[in-house]
Image 1 (cartoon, rainbow, N blue to C red):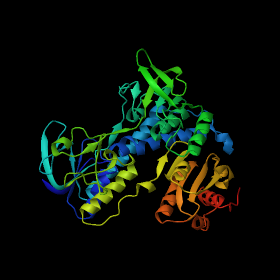
Image 2: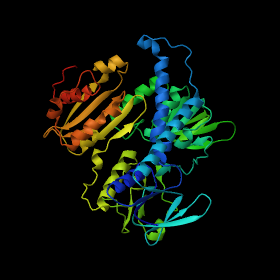
Image 3: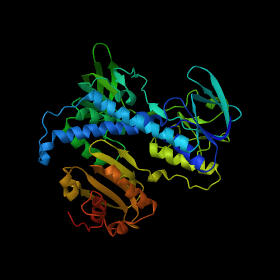
Image 4: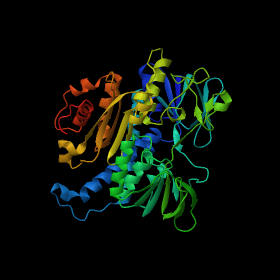
Length: 465
């Protein structure tokens, strides 16, 4: 079979690229070895949000009296919580199947490998092979949990994010290695359901170390109240799985003191490794660097007609980034003239409670870049909507260039703030100034008023502080 485009992998980069290609009139096929939707839909973005929602509802029920309600005998059924998450993922995967049929995209089940002549050899589950060709091929094979050499994942006592979503029994205690988005989200989920959680983070800043320092500090305070222990500036030196549980040796990078922790489960959340093994890169001479495929601004590799998007490339390993890259790549293939992706305006979201999101520069990065900045903060404790909802924790922080009013960055921590960050992304994309944000009437009462109020604070015009 011959196609205009073949996509290897059906995650949020691959399936979105395939749909856009079909819309542009390209005869398209997608190769997937497991489930349509990839890791994000089946084992990442979507099912984790289902888990987190269950944990949030459980917390609400346990604090029903705060809302003048009485809810007695509330218990968490861990098996049902996990089951609901899997059902949500399965339903979304069926949705992608529908989209493939709707757009007349050929789905080829099996493991794809690049071979010469712009062809893909697909190995079926039983071992048989099928060869398909195309004028253009996009590699979108995604990533998996990163393993540290001295701490291999056995899938039982030492687990990655995939196993964390399908444990048959809730652990009484857990050590989470890594305080990035994945680690923080799972720490919140298990802690909310009653698991004793300790987070070990290598970097000194602690929780979400790549976020603005004010955000990390605030989340650390809130997690401490929730009973989550955080060991920042520390490293897991050794792990033993002998006996019933896990013995974790943690060493402080500050004073080199050693702490021994016994737990039921160690969750490795130290990052993502690209799935680029055994897909034929060497056969075609496709260049890689530090385990990632090298591409130009339109995702062309050094081999004509072969492209790569998503977690296998040097950009941020985020679902929305992969989707955006896929659309840009396909539009370029189809002869359009898309703009390269502005990675400086890509939002980052973490879905623990409270949620965290950001876009653009941190305050420290802006100052380091030489900007004279105006910084405004507005706490949700001063927000009528947040107080009425019983969620006064957190704040909105905005950073502006003092000279021209350019919106350099924004950082939010609070209830449901991931639904607010798109306003900042759009404003930055439109080169909106601080004064224009202040004059944009925000509805009252809403959480989004905090963006206007924080901006007003940066210009000494805040009303409600």
